[in-house]
Length: 296
Image (cartoon, rainbow, N blue to C red; front, side, top):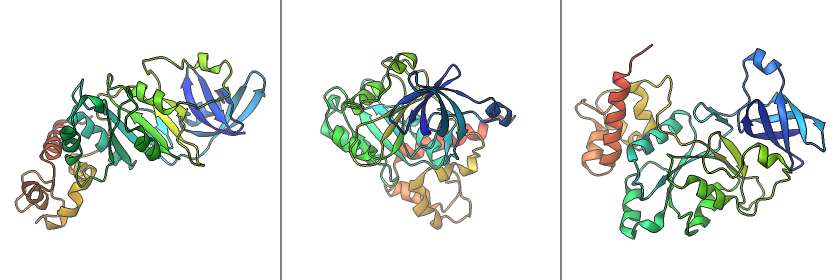
């Protein structure tokens, strides 16, 4: 039987199988010998040991289309980065770090500002303007009031989306809203996988109600606070800023990193107001961070 791993904890993997049930499984020892660690989001083949108790073994991990190191998830269609629009004010540098990480992993991203009921219309116009030219959808929602959730539900439909953001932005409340009316035949499994906890300690894949014929999953992840892009060199950081691409042909030098070079098309676009100064400022900070990072 095939299914998707929705959570892994303490050596157990919980697989949402094709029959709509969740099976508590152990992974075969051969995975350790082969250096394979099952991840949340993996498509897997399982052998059912006890249908009534819903237990089994993970027999095979099917090929992954992508994977993230932190959080450790696989087969993601989109990453949704959630920040609060207020209380706390969004940390745009941290937001850009996450967007860079997704660009580096070649995973499409979208931006969601929760608690939109706490800010006015002017602020709701200002924040998306910072991301002009990036191609990232920018949504405003309120998990508390349910405001504007329909646009987010439409965006998520038919996808497996990793939802991440710092602690305290209402991410868990938002996910609880999105999984309303989802019923899984989990029996007593829900207690074992600690559903309903307010603090997310492990990545977890949750079936969501979004309409359409394709299944919709949300991957709830622990709050992140750092950039994890092993192997990224400072010269490649520019490729993680999609709004730079249209202007790089105007740079005098091939491989221009848009910092101190003369006749730089990206800096010209910045001065012309076509690139966000906030985004470019964060780019320079991250560039310096990579430049000064010790190599081991």
